[in-house]
Length: 165
Image (tube, rainbow, N blue to C red; front, side, top):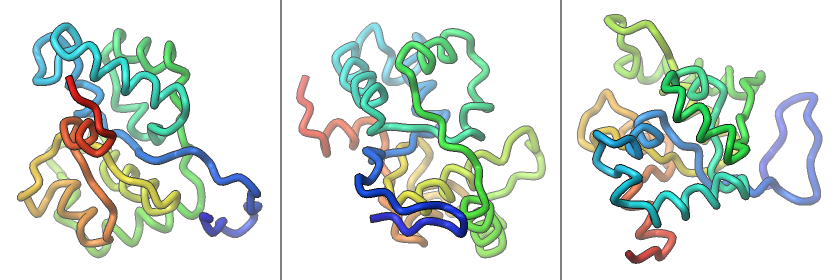
């Protein structure tokens, strides 16, 4: 059971959340991307079902990063659950950026979604889905590793879930 932040209540039934998905993984379904929906339709049908069942969620900062209208519609069509930033997530973000300042890029201050994505995974004790480079010390997978947060790309998600095509 997830320990609630101050002011939150315990629930008898834990939320179904299993994964929080990054913008780059959402984008990977586009026609010019590696997991394009036109080729990997069954993969995306499975992901769609996990989004609808709230097993795959996003955090509010990631929702803000998605600018493509078709992908915004995809989120809406699948009733994607957007987890809000609360005090616990903010505390986690502060911890992450203080301990891993390399995560922040001052050349692109458009969004700080990465820290919020990881902080959300920490709060809900769920895995992260991202296409980011696993070996770069400045990327999500290495920061997740530092906090023992499972981190997978879309192909690894399919493997973990036992999907074959």
